[in-house]
Amino acid sequence: MECSFQLRRGEGDRVAKLRLVETSLDGLLDKLEAEACNVDRLPYSHNIVSLILRQIAKRFGRHEANRAIEDFDLEDLGWAKEKEDD
Image (cartoon, rainbow, N blue to C red; front, top):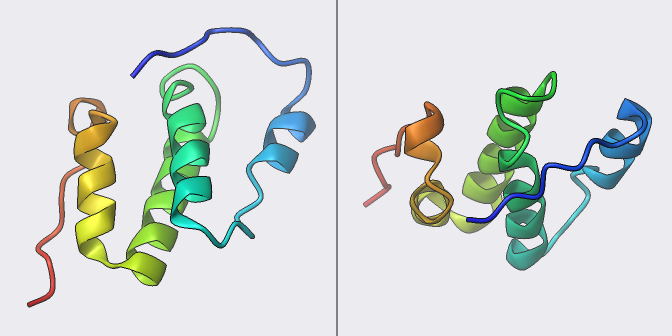
């Protein structure tokens, strides 16, 4: 995952871009990728990543959330995969 480390002017801009009304898996994954770059750099980034992962798990299943954790190397940042439903 490649992150761009450009600082944004205001937190309001960031929050507006991260609204979790996204309905597609691809849209949520795009938001997750963008926010994962901010972990340990911007306030609340851990919370936002967790919220996005919960939305993915709720709408598309734990297997998709686990795949996102793996694809974006989130285990290195402190997230763990959850046991998948049988």
